[in-house]
Length: 425
Ligand SMILES: C[S@@+](CC[C@H](N)C(=O)[O-])C[C@H]1O[C@@H](n2cnc3c(N)ncnc32)[C@H](O)[C@@H]1O
Image (cartoon, rainbow, N blue to C red; front, side):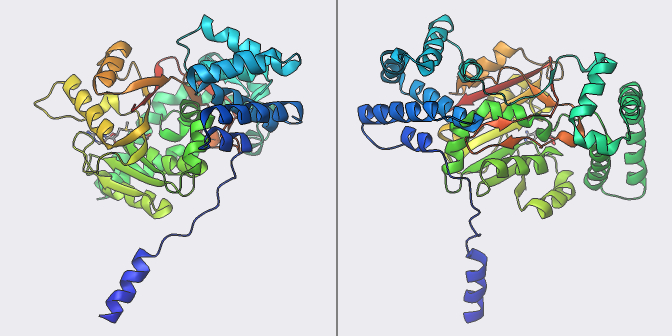
């Protein structure tokens, strides 16, 4: 009996808390329990201090957090901005007036649009190159990418070798795909279980490919950061043990875990997939990351209600496996109803998917189905940001103010993708 108790004690021993960066003062004021008017005064005063002592980009981010924070308090916050900060005769007043004038022009602008306008006026630069047509890269553009990216310089002895490899991968893409299929078939013939075979060739592809071609979670890191926004990143960071769920595992499972660790290393990660084949695939990921991976149907969740802070789906909708007796739209409806139920109030659902690939519905239909399940739309991250090179995957930084930093990481805007964030009111 005493041995059993001893074992039990070891099993329930709480895992060691990993330290998380201390949130900036302005964030603490935004989330304080003070009465609203006092709180608005404190935020306003901190914005002044941060702005007029700002020496670095990190300081300017704090100003942005404060101004965005005010906008979260509805008309009272707007009044503090309009009749308080915007009356300042210095440079802060000018920035606040720009933000105020932007609001009525775009009353329905989501958080990302407001934030981009604000960051621009505060000269906050977090991104490097954003490429709108990765198929048409000129020689000088490739030379520029080589010059700014130390990993490319390590991989290729000179820019010509890099340019040749880039052009070759573009040209050989279908060939690479065929090779891969053959490799998987070969492994299956040798008796390697399907999940294991998938794991092995995906690993090889992720390691060897120069240009990202697999749209897995980590390749969209920037989109997910922008969908959440800095204030909510900081909120998730300040929770003791926030819970995150990824529906649809595949390769993205391990990347999802790494991403969540950047937000909050004490966060709990849950990953589910319906396909049993992934059991052996998951073992690899699970052993690396201690995440909680379960074979479970997204349309029939076995979780307690209202427990997740945030749910993510990456490239699930187009390949959603539903019930044979249901139409595709009925399956989508069921999925979103289930996700709505397990989210906490105020929690979010972040989605990245591809229209062409998920051509079974239009953008408007999708929004309608989500709203029908009870969600309200909050953010669309501007445009999808996908990392151009495999080696840059998950190299983004989430800084101490909750902002994503992607300097020297070229990103591609994928026209056919969409990014949405919906919240449970
Ligand atoms: C294209 S993969 C998604 C990729 C992954 N999220 C990533 O970022 O790499 C789609 C995954 O969703 C899973 N899936 C499809 N329908 C599902 C359902 N009803 N419930 C749970 N998982 C499902 C599939 O088995 C597959 O692993």
